[in-house]
Image 1 (cartoon, rainbow, N blue to C red):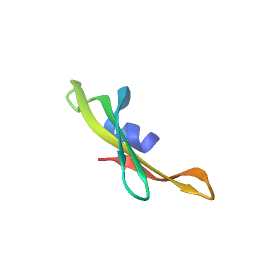
Image 2 (cartoon, rainbow, N blue to C red):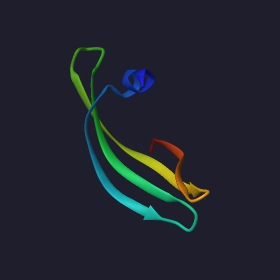
Image 3 (cartoon, rainbow, N blue to C red):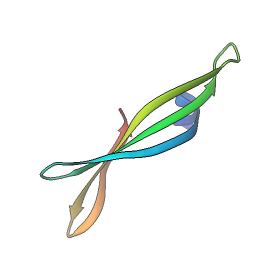
Length: 69
Protein backbone atom coordinates (compact mmCIF):
# COMPACT_ATOMS: atom_id res chain seq x y z
CA UNK A 1 0.00 0.00 0.00
CA UNK A 2 2.82 2.44 0.77
CA UNK A 3 4.30 1.84 -2.69
CA UNK A 4 0.93 2.73 -4.29
CA UNK A 5 0.64 5.86 -2.15
CA UNK A 6 4.15 6.95 -3.14
CA UNK A 7 3.50 6.31 -6.83
CA UNK A 8 -0.12 7.49 -7.18
CA UNK A 9 -0.94 9.51 -4.05
CA UNK A 10 -3.99 9.15 -1.84
CA UNK A 11 -7.04 7.28 -3.08
CA UNK A 12 -9.90 9.80 -3.17
CA UNK A 13 -12.67 8.05 -5.12
CA UNK A 14 -13.52 4.69 -6.57
CA UNK A 15 -16.52 3.44 -8.51
CA UNK A 16 -17.36 -0.04 -9.72
CA UNK A 17 -17.78 0.00 -13.52
CA UNK A 18 -18.43 -3.50 -14.79
CA UNK A 19 -17.86 -7.22 -14.57
CA UNK A 20 -16.41 -8.86 -17.67
CA UNK A 21 -17.42 -12.51 -18.00
CA UNK A 22 -14.96 -14.86 -19.64
CA UNK A 23 -15.10 -18.66 -19.80
CA UNK A 24 -12.75 -19.36 -16.88
CA UNK A 25 -12.47 -16.13 -14.83
CA UNK A 26 -14.33 -12.98 -13.91
CA UNK A 27 -12.79 -9.52 -14.33
CA UNK A 28 -14.13 -6.80 -12.01
CA UNK A 29 -13.25 -3.26 -13.13
CA UNK A 30 -13.23 -0.09 -11.02
CA UNK A 31 -12.44 3.53 -11.89
CA UNK A 32 -10.20 5.07 -9.22
CA UNK A 33 -8.99 8.61 -8.59
CA UNK A 34 -5.82 9.53 -6.74
CA UNK A 35 -4.42 12.89 -5.61
CA UNK A 36 -0.86 13.84 -4.74
CA UNK A 37 1.33 16.93 -4.59
CA UNK A 38 3.80 17.53 -7.38
CA UNK A 39 7.37 18.66 -6.80
CA UNK A 40 6.15 22.26 -7.25
CA UNK A 41 3.49 21.79 -4.53
CA UNK A 42 0.55 21.77 -6.96
CA UNK A 43 -2.16 19.15 -6.60
CA UNK A 44 -2.10 16.39 -9.22
CA UNK A 45 -5.22 14.29 -9.85
CA UNK A 46 -4.86 10.98 -11.66
CA UNK A 47 -7.56 8.50 -12.75
CA UNK A 48 -6.72 4.81 -13.19
CA UNK A 49 -8.64 1.62 -13.88
CA UNK A 50 -8.26 -1.19 -11.36
CA UNK A 51 -8.89 -4.83 -12.27
CA UNK A 52 -9.58 -7.73 -9.93
CA UNK A 53 -9.56 -11.20 -11.52
CA UNK A 54 -11.42 -13.94 -9.66
CA UNK A 55 -12.08 -17.59 -10.29
CA UNK A 56 -13.20 -20.65 -8.37
CA UNK A 57 -11.17 -23.40 -6.72
CA UNK A 58 -12.95 -26.36 -5.17
CA UNK A 59 -16.22 -24.43 -5.49
CA UNK A 60 -14.91 -21.40 -3.56
CA UNK A 61 -14.13 -17.94 -4.98
CA UNK A 62 -10.43 -17.04 -5.15
CA UNK A 63 -8.51 -13.93 -6.18
CA UNK A 64 -6.23 -14.79 -9.10
CA UNK A 65 -4.72 -11.36 -9.73
CA UNK A 66 -5.27 -7.64 -9.34
CA UNK A 67 -3.64 -4.41 -10.42
CA UNK A 68 -3.94 -1.07 -12.12
CA UNK A 69 -4.36 -0.84 -15.88
